[in-house]
Amino acid sequence: MSEIFTAISELGYASPGTALQVRILRTWTPQVRGHETWFLAVDKYGDAIQILGQRKDQGFVQSALAISKCYTLTKYGCGEPDTYQKWLHNPVYIAVGTASCITSIPDTVTIPTHWFNFIPKSQIPAYINQYPDFLGVFVKLVACIKKNDEPYLLLILRNEFGEDIAISLWKECTDAPSKFNRNAIQNAPAPTVIAVTNVRIMDYGGSLRLGTSSATHIYVNPPIKETDTLLDSYKINVASIPLFGLPVPLTEINEKKHSDLLEKTFTAEASIIEYVFSDYWYQVFCPQCKISTLKQGKDWFCPSHGTITSPTPMYKLMATITDPTSSMTVTLSDNAGQKIFGTTADKLILEGDPNHRKKLPNIIKETEGITKKMKLRITNTSTERNIRFIITDIEDNSSQSSSITTPPSENTSSSNVPHKTPTCSSAQNQPKVKRALNFENTGMDKSDAGPKRARRSQ
Image 1 (cartoon, rainbow, N blue to C red):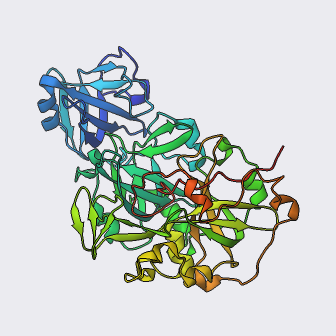
Image 2 (image 1 turned 120 degrees about the vertical axis):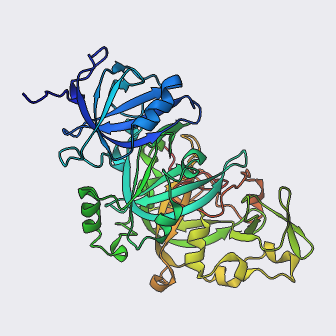
């Protein structure tokens, strides 16, 4: 008679350790719990469960289970994971050790070779403090630095709707070759599909942040149907990825609540009527730690790395934008500045003129009055009472228009708009925030010092 096997879906707390056939797909050892080694296993029904080998049994289990291999397990126990052990939705895990029976079996097509729990971007708020998976087309990797000077990477993916998803890749992930291969991501032909597993979703003061966990693994072009579906939606051509959607009137964006703006990007079609800067129109960063540097003779000085001969200048501008419905003052990301000005900040710096930092170059002034489509989102430090916007992307110069759009007079009068458009001198009183990233992106921003957005008086 053929043996009857238990299904993962049948397991619960205190279940008997009857025969279970699984394939091992991933393994990880949490940085803060080095005595635990976990495995992700899947059965022929496509259900997944965590397997734990710990303490004196840890070495035995690590040698007994191999990635991609299939096994029959008996004599195991089922426990309930605590808060720091639960990376899957399954309410139980399997504990194995030297008393367990782990038998390797021939590979079988009946047990899946991949398992993911993908969610769309729209469901992110429903998964706070959980660990879902994400799939998207690779956009870029951004080198960043935390407040404690620890480096990390920011991964930007784009889904089938053209929405960007930003995921912080912490050291525990990027330092593990079995979890993350930067060269494989950056050298793969575009468009490249990336799957990121077990992403932790955290709420930081009303702003949702995505970051890797101990269980995170990153896959390049995983051989699953979802990859093919995503590539088909882009027609196998990265140029077909929609950069700008239908424009939303500024007045509609202005009237939205903080909760309605979280994790969302809006396309606006507006004119930049004035550029504003608080002290200098650019800022110079250390290429190693991404911290602001100081001028030192012909070079620059970083308090952490000393003299810097080749620093990283970036635009440090705000802009007043307007459309037929309203206006607002926003931060201009370095990425957007490069697109609209057609050059990087370092090309516009005059070394022989120390006061040049306080004078806006003509090439920047010439773009005032130009109407363009642009992407807007709130900054990461925005709150319900202080909502600020940043331009993360903008049409380049090839699509510029010379028409100037003026909002209705009732929206520009001081009686109806709570804030006044700042000038170079008045902006000096704006709060300054430590800038840590080397350029702006859709996931994190460094220029959160812009003024609060305009709202209509109630």
